[in-house]
Length: 65
Image (tube, rainbow, N blue to C red; front, top):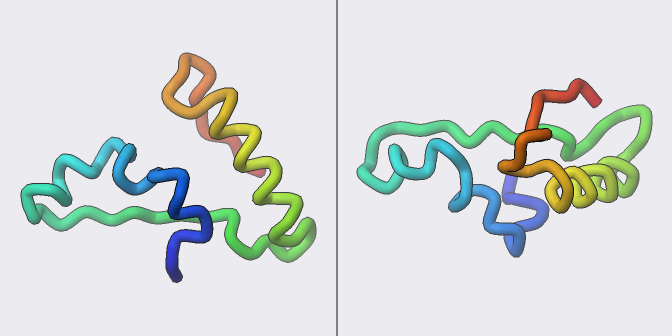
């Protein structure tokens, strides 16, 4: 599945990108693309808010949405 928000640059800012850059196999697993209960619009809004407020900050912790 293509990145639904490529303008975010999330793949290139990811922690594992340095492996991919030297051609070491690396997986970029991404979720939240088609939640059954709350649908794409809800999760997209939630993800954008999380990226703006938590990504690569002390509050960047796993959450089970």
